[in-house]
Amino acid sequence: MKYDSRGLPVTTDSDAVIRAIDSYAHELVSLGSNSALVRAAADSNPGCAILQAYAASLFLYSQTTADAKRAAPYLSRAIERLGDLTEREQVFIRAVNAGCAGDFESALQLYETIAERWPRDIVAAKIAEFHFFETGLARRQLDVMSKAAAANPDISHVLAMHAFALELNGDRDRADEVALTALAIDYDTMWAQHCRAHVFAGQSRIAEGIAAMEQYAPSWNRYSHYVISHNWFHLATLYLADLRFDAVSSAYRKYIWGVAPDAVVEHTDAILLLWYVELAGGKVDSEWREIAPHIRANARDHLFPFLNCIYLYALARAGESKEVAIAIAEMERHAQRQSGELAHVWQRVGVPIAKGSIAFANGDYDRAADLLGPVLGEVACGGGSDEQRGVFIESYLVALIRAGRKDEARSALTDYIADRPETSLQRRWSSWI
Ligand SMILES: [Fe+2]
Image 1: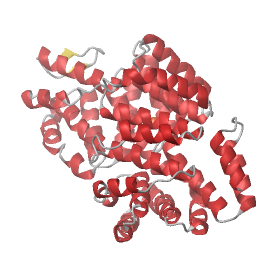
Image 2: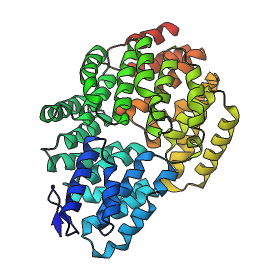
Image 3: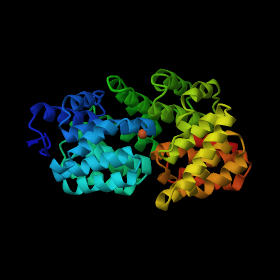
Image 4: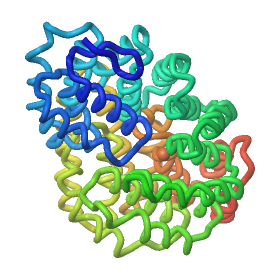
């Protein structure tokens, strides 16, 4: 038995294994570009069960069912040894196993147990954060991250997770405060910089947000493409709120699309940004056709509904109506096979949003508004972050405007702006009504 740098017992006699575990924990929570090294460490130390589970956890981030299955050899080596392990290691391995099988709720319950009993386990908290993203369970996310932050006040990356959970719960003032505390500990806390982008957008602090993100941007270059692409996505949406279409287009070409065109994380940033451009009245055309060949298979995967909705929108905009028809039919069949809470998520929320997104893409604005409007309040359960799910709210609003439903459009815009300062983009929508 040895202990990792968080003081957690690990069933191993190897110092090299402990170094590999500490390195993975750091890379994962700091969004470093070397987290994949854990796979080589797991291959070299097949007898360390939790190291196998760490290697397996990497496959979760692909956001594809096929890649999650590639975790199987690591998981079976971990599960074989389950009886010899500490209780925390056992719970963690079962959690990763559930996550890789697409059973996010079971995985989350196990990670919640870890947060309660072993809150120094920052790897468990980070992976839980990802499943919370896939399920939209922001309240429970905040509970886990509050415990993690209280137990790890010295780790800026854990404070950043707490800040982001606050943001997703609408407590943006406090989120910004905690993110700034994390950045004071370590300026290169990427997740804290990213959290602030959400806060700036959520509070419509556009000029301040652009200035801060542009100041942070040079530090993104030595991180993985995911960090660069996603942070630029956020900066680009701030440009869009100012109607700076040229700056958006330049960010898209330079930092967002084309680096890893088969990766779901890149699809998400690219599709959402193009969708937001269209919602703002900008023109997008060849970009959809560039993306389409890379997303056809993803549109038929069923991990969480948010992904299907954005893939279907992109394929519809690329003119791939046959692919759209097949993928929405498969999504409906998948929804019908679900039971319990998942039946609600897929049948009552996911499918209407997907169909509303397709209708909007095809210019059938009355139908889009009728499908999206009734489920907007529940859209979080389909997954995605608040800013990503904003496309559905904005599509509903723009659908009402384009369908000529002026009173409903005015009321939807007033609700959307709420108590925030009005942006140039929102003024443009007002002028369309
Ligand atoms: Fe984000």
